[in-house]
Every structure is written in C-alpha cells, then in structure tokens.
Image (tube, rainbow, N blue to C red; front, top):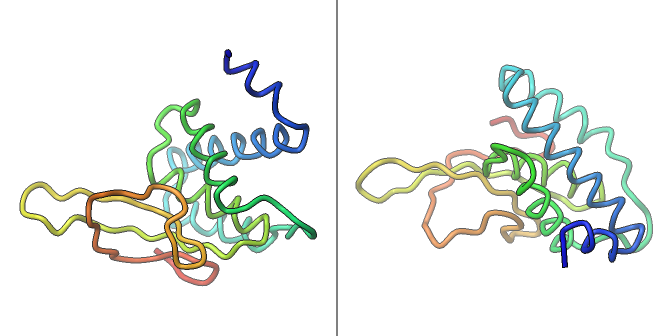
Length: 144
C-alpha cells in the first residue's frame, strides 16, 4: 500500500494528529535552523505553556512517538534533537509530562551526542542501544 493509501486508511482523528505532528516537527526543524537556540528554546517554552491539554482519552505516548517518528521521515534534517523537542511539545499538548535529555557517549573515541524525550521515566522517542550519559535535561522549567 502506498503512503497516501496508508494515511487515507487512518481515522480522521489519526490523520489530524499526524498532520499536527508534521507541522510541529517541521516547525521545530525550521526554528532550529533559523533562530539562535536560546531564543528558540524560549519560544518552545511559551508554546508548551500554552498547550491546551485535551480532556478525555487522548493518544498514548506510544502513539504520539510513532507519529513523530513517521513524519520525521518526511522532514529533511529531522535529527534526534528536532524529534525530541517536537515530541516534547506534542506530548505536553496531549497532557503527558515530558523531559528532553541531551547526552554524550562515554566510550573512548569520537564523542557522539543524542537527544531523547522521556515521559513517565521511560524513553519515548530515540531509544538507543548505545549508552549515553545525560548532560542536561529540559522540561517545563528546565533550560538546556
């Protein structure tokens, strides 16, 4: 089945959520490219603070993570940082607490960095087999 066929087979609510995820991932990607990071981080904090928490049975963290992962394939340069920040915005929009961690490898050799969001103490997007040492985290009130 083609990608268009897959999207059309989703319920209208799932289609709307996928479109919303695409707009957030694309917006975060563009923002990271054009705006100095401290200023962009302040914009994201305001966006998270204005999140309209949905009442009732909303999507699970797994569903939202899948949405971000799927649409990230269609946003050029959607790195782990883009996905983590977009995932945090989307998760908090639907009433899930989310914290973004940024870490590095502690193995000898070139340093590798990675960003991932956690909700309820578990990695939501960007789980890795590589062990990363968290350097910092960003939640509602924490600055990278």
